[in-house]
Image 1 (cartoon, rainbow, N blue to C red):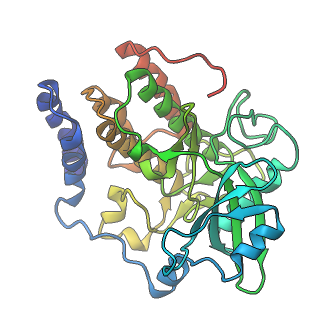
Image 2: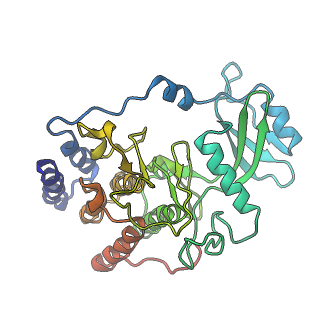
Length: 345
């Protein structure tokens, strides 16, 4: 209870100095401070097997031949003596499209998730690819919903190294790298982030690593979400529930590696119980609002109130993704933010 009140007070404590013109950079550190009060546990430590699974892959030795045989031309490495790493850049030979190639292990979370997206994409046009309507591709999605996934163009398997090459459209820079933005652009991008999380949850997917570095933005200010290494797909026969039932474990997980560590992961008994995966995404989305405000130079004290319900210390007090999107629109109306129309984002 004390920690819960401290979280709330921490937010309101910031309103005074922010009104005087301070950059919301202070907001991040102070907002996170209550999470360390008392006997809070340290950052989640990975087991040896988890560290082994999460170790980033270097590209297989035959990666250039694999890509060439599938119609792609690999860009030369920046330094000849260094390994290529797990993220490569290439060009589609037929039309010159710029691509990103990510090396993943066969069977890991990201390769399974991207294979699923790729399968859906090949079923028709109304599928989860950036800028397309996806209401027809999944029964759990509200009519008119749109997705923000980076376009998966191809999947290439190398049986010799047990590696999967994910060929993605080169989307753009991360939100953390965009620099200063105008208010219309800032809120246009932020709305797409809220929509993306809502779409993922409607499909039964928890991303589990929402951050400014895992949202990309192109020159048209269209947003795409990437990096599904930690994601979970909850395959349910019924329509995806809007909330985690306290007596069911269908959406719950044990503490995992994540960029934005929620307060429930720091509790004494955090590793003896399971936590709602969707609420972890909501917390991270709230932190994203504040970090994105800082990196884009958008000094708006009222953004604290936008993020407040999303970063509630009690996970069950946080809204669902759908409720968070509604709250975003209501907040914009209250403060006089004019959002673009409901056309393609």
